[in-house]
Image 1 (cartoon, rainbow, N blue to C red):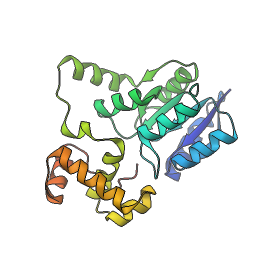
Image 2 (cartoon, rainbow, N blue to C red; image 1 turned 45 degrees about the vertical axis):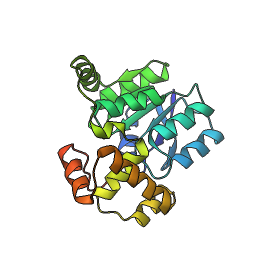
Image 3 (cartoon, rainbow, N blue to C red; image 1 turned 180 degrees about the vertical axis):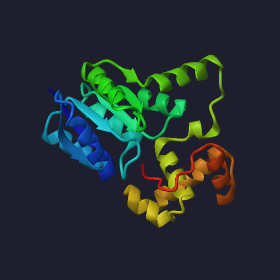
Image 4 (cartoon, one colour; image 1 turned 135 degrees about the vertical axis):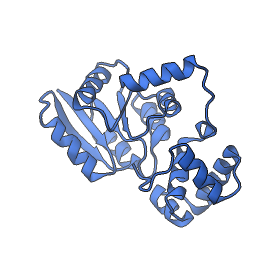
Length: 215
């Protein structure tokens, strides 16, 4: 039996995953969390075989959360289930310590295979993502400017382009207004942009624009 901790801030996604796992007797959803703080709290309270986590959640999330979890629970396998399929994002998450990476549009059998693999302390990347990563490296593709952004800067970028204010972003990410402004300044510098209009255009050109910005 594989005890699973699901970290996902969207109730619809969590419920959908639980329905899938109802048909997989070897997997039991032993815990749920809606943000990084809850993940760390649940891991202190109980033991799990796999952490299945979204990449973008309120507060601590993404690579930052993975690093913290691995620092406290180095033997806990972490499988990322995300909407993002960019090779540089996958590579960054694996570098942070994740044991596997799949996307939310994957088939249930891919999800099951990934959970089995990481639970056995093996690494797993969805075949289509692995292929893209290999060809990207083989062709020597240049890393796009946003590939230099931290996970938090990417979160701020997506929230900004979705129309959220500095105050709203600070509230959602549980950080100060000043910190949000600093992230905005740094991401604009890294992208060599000087206005919100230019940022919106860049986000749309590179598929970063997300009207929800919370997945």
